Length: 356
Image 1: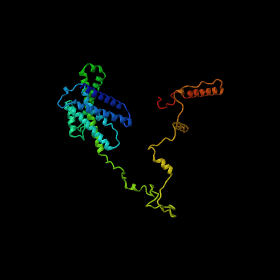
Image 2: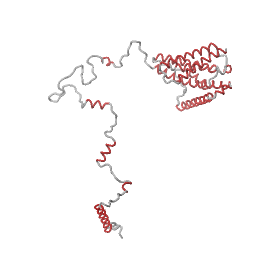
Image 3: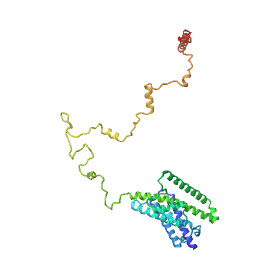
Image 4: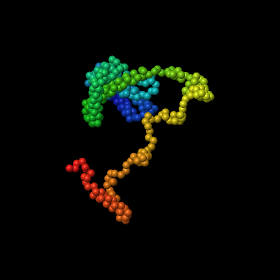
């Protein structure tokens, strides 16, 4: 039995390493990624076959009968479902087939846990709700927005608590080496976290399958889709034109547009400039600037819209040039005129209203 355990343990470890490498890749649609994905799925299937051949899990057992190291093999179907969802197929029918396979794997995972009473009361109720209506399954069945929000928050907190617990146990591997109970707790926590992820995946699978069911059926090979507009059938025929003024009723007009008395002789379209019309088709709905900021400031300055001077610079008076006698005489005459004005107009002389 030990050789068998080593064999399934080696396959499971190989599959886990390959799955983690796939999780670090950023090109899920590349041929190399899809090839590695197929190889990983095959390894998990071999591991699952080993577990079935060895009868690791039996409906006659309880969780206490399962060893701590064997609990991790309960997640094989979960990992298979997760990987099958990542298979890239451009055909809608093939995509639907893969989604149904993934859903079946999730169901096997939940049924195995349910047979060992490993589902909590809330998860067991969700699994029962899923079994009753797979097509319209939702983790929140109520239509009340507030109730849906509360349930979403509660499940999110439970998931975060499981993540913190997993992180703590994985960061302390020495505890697992010394105590078998720690290994058991770690594997049970992983399984509980996968249950949360399973119900979220089942909800998204139901939504995607519903969208696929609304898609039009695929056409047989060699048959092309008919045009939605019957008028498109004649687009390749001779004489067809998109111009409204080119021909009317299959007839082309030539000659003068107006008669001598000003009456129109044939259909016509008034055009200003073809290039101008082309430019005006695709343009912003707002007016674009016609000049730069510097050009605008220069124009405002030219029109006198900018007042210069003032501010702290206006308080600084230039020092007089002693060599400029004309400027000195002008300042002296200005000062004398101001003194004479002050003498002739004493302070308050203009206030004729409040005189006593």
